[in-house]
Length: 417
Image 1 (cartoon, helix red, strand yellow):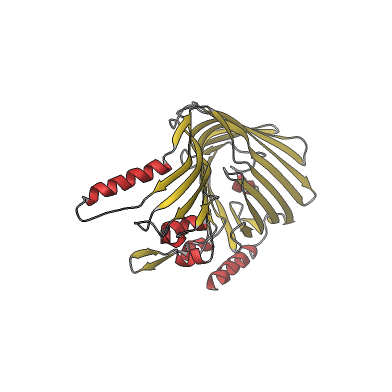
Image 2: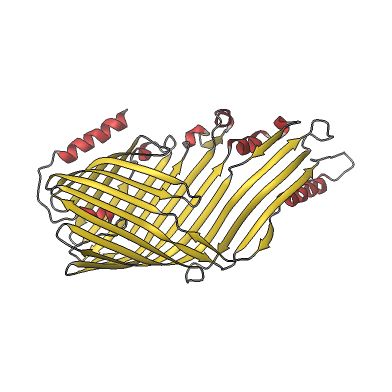
């Protein structure tokens, strides 16, 4: 409970400062997230320190199946399996390796280089139970293992962004990105069934039916061997004391044709377990068993055809009310699509404050699909020509990481001319 009191006191402290009109633009928190970004200064993102944004979200927190005994970490899925939970998590990383922007009359131009990583994993409760407790529990029964998926996508982006003040209250922005696909793996189908027999000589004899398919591609870090294109569209509208922002990102695709393949395993297989007697060489029997398992789950390459994949789309909506010149109340929503077409939805309710003309704070309560007790805390500080941004959508993770299932960190350093 003390951590919630700490956050409340921090919120009260931020809002107790005297109100000042400031030329400092709080939109810098959204420098890398809104296509309608506009500033009166020329800005250089410090190379490799420009902006790094990391999200990690799990359906269950780590303390559900792990604990520490002195210096050792103990993994125990027993209660996890009994509760019937699936294991799933998502990882998203956006690294802005370079950024440069400059104003020109009513327009703002910017360009840069970014690197994206998306990873999604879902393992069903039945699969975790199989690996944790073995197949002896399924004697003379058939069990189906479905909805097990893994997906990875990594690509770089060379982008050009343009925003324009159509009128005093309306601004439009767009970003065009040339993409280079680096790694792609998509386990489109990972289903199999298992039936064990109590009448067999060994306790592990089973019939296994597989229906597995995946496609993959990989390329060098630099280049355009797997080319792609994406467009971001954004707008901002002011109505009296209200500000409305909308942004639609990653509207595009990647054409994968570098070292790509489609592989599958489909059919029925019999595994007779380990049948060992004292006159046999144990290592040879183990090798034979491993060869049998490899034969069952061997993924035969069926083609090297090129293929397209769409990008994980992202949508941002932001509404703010200027309670005072340097104090805003806001509601924000953003959704991020995974490689598997599922969405993570995030909602924020909070306030932002600027004081001393060089420092901004943002504090909000937020929740998403899996986590409902998150506190966003962001600070932006300008030291002469240098600006530093730090943001976390769940500051409570810092105090207790194992009991949280949502981690979000963002940091960036910029130089103003």
